[in-house]
Length: 279
Image 1 (tube, rainbow, N blue to C red):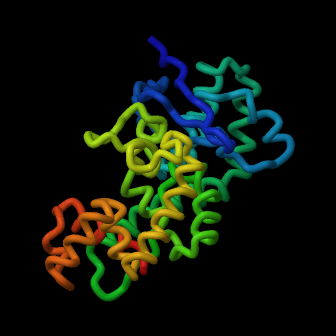
Image 2: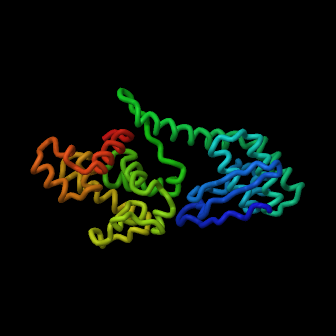
Image 3: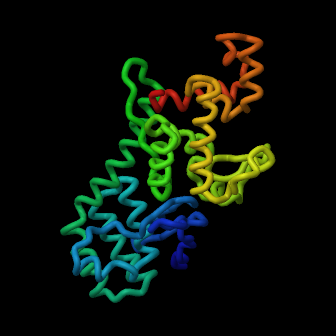
């Protein structure tokens, strides 16, 4: 039986889509590909060469999801481009002539897209490895691909509230990992925290946690307030995770060594974020 069409949902205020359920494609050679739920795609893995783009854009969706995922995961380019044409014909219903024309155009002009998406994944992997093992040289942390729809809002919020570069992006990654099931509220924390910034309604009634863009600005403003109260970003991060009252009491009771008395989750929260972002 041939693969079903992927279930996609548009991400508000962006040109990206999120895959709602894990999706599988079985190629004609029998090889099976699995794209995980939460994968974010722009359905646009090809260069904007007018003729190629006119043939491709809007005509193939299932094939575009597969192609974007293959590029993102550094599959051999020739294989990815061939599967684009194959899936376009089998699932999206384009004619064989159009499928072959798309393959030719993508293969001739798609190097920049392939290198950019392959490089992005390698940089993310390298920064994660470097951030957890390096002792004398800190790699620049790079947000994952799933953060793309929110990066403009995050950058603006960091500038508006004078946060260090990538601190908010890294905090949100720690909170939600930019998973759409978390951002939309389908999955909540055991404590009841919701959304991209894992905000608890009872403590923060002035913001809608499931509005990711409102939550991004609110989280930046709140983190800046915590920094003003405690004097440094490490303590502010701990307070975001554990609560400002808990951090205040721990500092009063234990002085400069207070963090070692905090819950292990909070200690790891601060350690992992500051391993990736210089504060």
